[in-house]
Length: 241
Image (cartoon, rainbow, N blue to C red; front, top):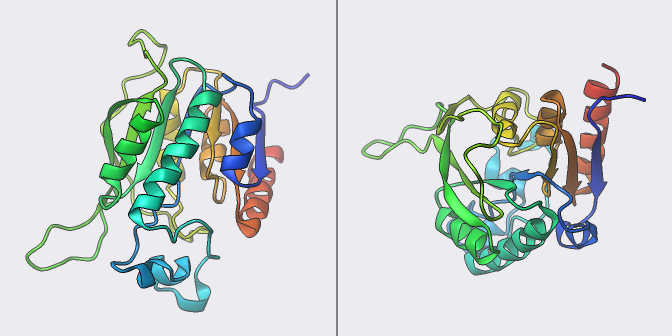
């Protein structure tokens, strides 16, 4: 019998799929949900994601779903999936959710409304960003994190940094893809041998990072092209190893 970590990509809407998991099925929730923060007006927010987040024109990665909500709708939606994710998480399980500065207050609100204990914010320093004269560079995104109830400091996990410094991945296959090494560092907040859930799997980076670090992992992805792409990526990089 193989002792290799197990992984799965489920094609579906997180709000539906999360309800199907039994309580306490996962040891951590680590995810990068749609931010719905690009654009200043609702018309700009409603544009295709490739137009909001890429300057590559026809060469940009495919669009993804769920990014056209206004702030109130996004907060309500986030509270709902975070509630369902907490139900599927074991007591003490950590949660880590990426977000940008625009939605940071909404993310921490939604996390707490869903019943998680908010424990802080870590920083992803991307380094490169467009300079703006007389303003601060917007070179950071954030990781809102917490736990499903008590989270003893005696857990067998390392001391993690509060700032992760990695540039955006080259040759991205998803519009908002995170660096693989960043995710390999981040998943270590999970106890060894745990099962990690990513409700917004995208191109599968979190699942790939988790398996590389020895965890089981389940990802959910609603966008057809990315669900298929994630499965093929993981099969290529993991099952062939």
